[in-house]
Length: 189
Image (cartoon, rainbow, N blue to C red):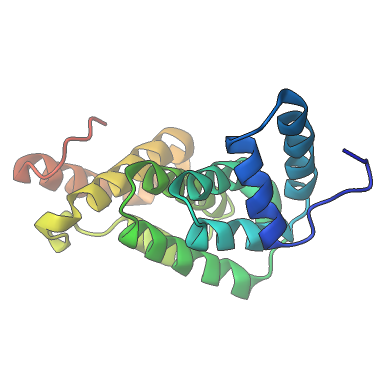
């Protein structure tokens, strides 16, 4: 592909992701991957990736969008406006809560972990952290998978941000103890 070609909008991003998932030849996947890599370098790409995660026509495209955004969110997060950050957190909570496809939900949970990690390290406590540390008794039987994703995110945070989470260890212990005693989770921490 010509070096001047670039992804300019969300529709072009979704087409590029489709090509990566279903290429007609190796050159096509290589050139399209380069376009997506160049697009991902821009902080403005976050909005497009979030749009595809929410509205992508196929579950594997939504999953790939979440995976690719996950790889760049840490470097872009500080460059985003505070209002956009809060809206992103609300959107990810909504998406994880409503996502029916396991692999898409897992990719969203991984993205939420990265954002939670970045914000913990910068000593921010926000709606995302409150959501992740929800009391397990507040989940009903149809939300077990959602609770398991919260446990997964907590375990990743404990592993990577244990110093920042020290004040929350009693709360984390309570969440884990409740999940084990209630038998609501299959997640092994």
